[in-house]
Image (cartoon, rainbow, N blue to C red):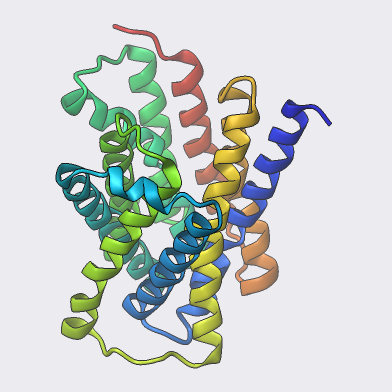
Length: 294
């Protein structure tokens, strides 16, 4: 099997695993609160990444990190996993899984918008049109199709799920120029993130071991949202001739996620959710292939 076929194989595995996460979030939140789920998931990811670095004898790469590198990792760890997943999991706790997973997927559009003031990038009229199309999809989902009534089914949940995409976009913007080993960098980020989550639990929740379902849910999220799947995705990117060959597959995640949500969580997928998702992803694709400097 040549490298490109292997890249597609790894990418498909990552897409399929990420497609199960929305359902894992929703089911786990039936047994634990969102901060407890986040704490044990982040701790699981940190332990896994530590063992991964140990197995590959890469722990010594941490010695090359400067004080400034660790400060950067602390700031990134505050954004992700702490702030991003705290907001996102809270949204999952009050929204339907189909709404949360779809609304969160506007992060590529947020990435474009935030790149204007932060990276001083310019966008053209076609990019603006694509952004409008994606946000129309948000309104379709948030209002369950009643866009003329302009009445959100759950305003707080919509703001949290959509707002989490801003945090994710910021994380990736500030991550762009970081050339450190990806696994080592991710381990330090999650270690700091876990530290940040700990006092949040003491203040707003209760530090305790979850029941069996909650614990296994947190471990699943830690491994297949935060740990293993990320490394599989990186492997796909490294093997692929160009990143575009595999990154386009990421657009399949929310569609597959809706299928899993319907089968596993038992939610009836609303017609408005499907239409909204098509508009959001359509806008993202148009932004990618139409965008030209103004």
